[in-house]
Image 1 (cartoon, rainbow, N blue to C red):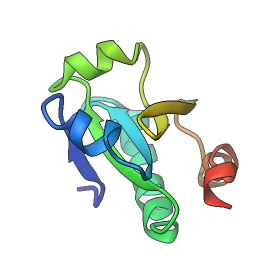
Image 2 (cartoon, helix red, strand yellow):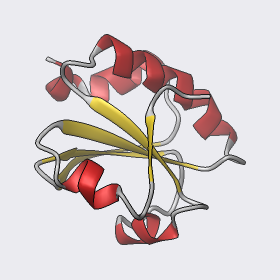
Image 3 (cartoon, rainbow, N blue to C red):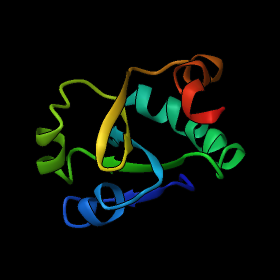
Length: 108
């Protein structure tokens, strides 16, 4: 299982929206193969860059409200929040260097 924090519809605002940190939300589902493939990569990025970005996971099957609010139509979908606003969206499973390139502005 992932070392990333799980968020839910109930605590999303508290954990993500009200945070001053840079937070990437991984929208995923248990049955999604690409989601399972990208999960350990996100865990590595989270531990290597813990001082710059926090990564949390939201299961779209268990938490449909936030998935609908942020218009998640395909997974894995990762949205970076800063100051409660979405500042970057990354769609699909990618190798670690590609995800790090997508997140370069936040990891610098």
